[in-house]
Image 1 (cartoon, rainbow over the protein chains, first blue to last red):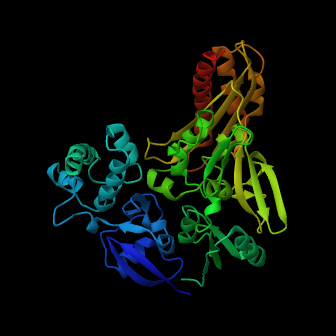
Image 2 (cartoon, helix red, strand yellow):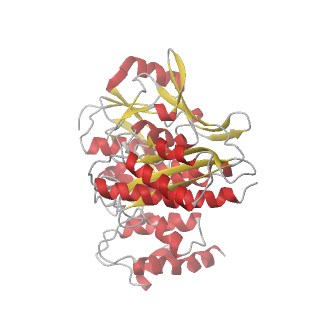
Image 3 (cartoon, each protein chain N blue to C red):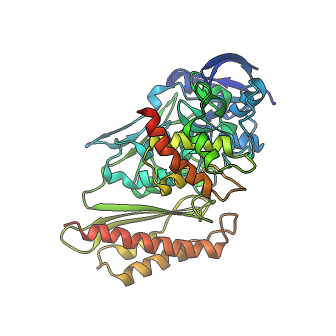
Length: 159
Length: 292
């Protein structure tokens, strides 16, 4: 039996009918067209489905859509503000951190959650914070470099 | 998708009434990090999923001198990892929380789910057993309190009946002279697969360099988390030396009979147990040596 629910994503609230066992990832992709949310392993390991729920990173492929009732979801489509890329997005470009791109939306959102909680994270804490996001292309070097570089961008944005 | 009804009781009483009515046809949803994976992998196809997420009384951590640390089942692993409400004496619980999966999983995974899912590799269970924690279970007919150590009867199997819910995890105040550690091996580094886990808690005899109590608890080497009781007994009362540590570590390894699995071969796991127990004991002895 489908449930009626309100889902708030990137600042907009949508009314949806969802199957109870449908994942948040599926609803974001199929019902709302937010295909930046990737489904890689579909078992909560690879992290390509990572979105923010009330600012915290979650694996949307193993989160039921109904678990997101009353929460604010952020996907990468919602990260840029007033047409300007978030400092992490810009850093990923500046530091050539993107290859095939599949892991990137999840990686950037995980990085945002990490730096929001730990603005002075060093390389070790960044790597541990990204332990739920796999990348098969880059070897993580430029990704970590970009995130560390983004710290200053974020701080100056707050000033 | 199969027919599945989603239930959202607002109170514990409502949840227990529903569980009594539905019995084994209902699966309890806490964080979902185990349940949803099982559904995706078709290891379960529940007729009812009962979401406990609206019952606020099932969340939280509190500490008092009398009861010790009381953790409610829907408390997320991330909250345990970061909460200032977990006093230093219970640090092995926090250490285990830090080792569980990754931050995104920890934001949803709960301590109640980790215990009740009863994976042989469950991270939160060994520290709870090392600190002699107990679990309060309730149903519509009453309640009972069981040592966490006695909950597990096999892989993914507990003594918790269909009508029961875990509502509290209680960890008594450790003695002042107790120190511990939780060590977890990952194959291929921090992003790798979780393998053997070791929780140690040792209680020093005041003014002596020996130990009055020791618990060595191992995960992912047996159908349920296990204590290496033979190794524990070699640590009691006698002097603490390098030799005693090595002997205890070897004995702990000998007490395990792990199977070959994707977490490692039997031989590999036995070596891990020996090395982790030796490393852990050395570090804990170092801490308690500095105590009076």
